Image (cartoon, rainbow, N blue to C red):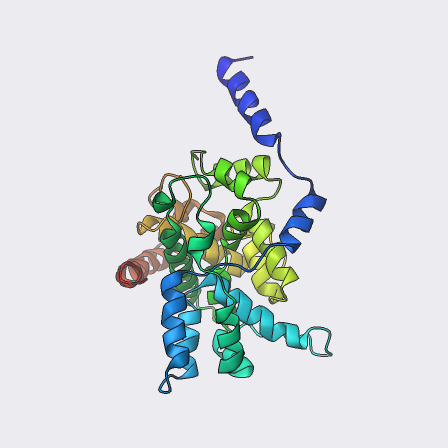
Length: 313
């Protein structure tokens, strides 16, 4: 056996020592406390809710900037219908906000912890890039919708934006529910996103996509969002939402390329999206002329989204 192989096997053995069983993972995720929100978003939303001149559309726009608040608003509104004859779940943040009313949203906000409460993970708190996590989530949400627009596909109920926003929610759940394992993950360096997922499975048992998808399913989020979040790193594995999963995968890679990589210690590979399964699923059958036009439109989109992202939060 080569020395490198022996070292890799030793490291893998060390990683898997504390890995949890499926049963324990499910139990711990079910017990996950309320997801934290970014303090600046909480404060902005609080000001809007206290103002007599605010509109629901403005309030919904702020909620859409936050994966935690979006999840909790949709969970709350769909919990009301849970067990009813209607199987249709609400995926739109504005629709959910109108249904709940401002008082319910105020109650939800008052019970929402802010991210500063969960950043003490045994590291230098100031160095942990939680704002990057939020920016990456927002960038992926915006670009998921833009990618689908380029593919001439439209979702009427906001599930495309919501799925993009929540694609990495599992990482936040990891930080809150499994801080020791999360801290161990943050010591790792990854070759690429595929390698990062492999290490997550070795250390935790599930990767962040599966953790996020299970949490969302358990909190009454619509099936298309759950499926897309689950398979956003492997859209070819999705039976029900390969299109939406593909758009999220491309958007995820493009957001990293814009200089907003999230919280992973992973190198950014330029134009990696062109070699992704998602790109092949959505655009693989395009002619050379169509592909050139598509790439040109995408360049303009990225310039616009980059300005938006670097001016947000």
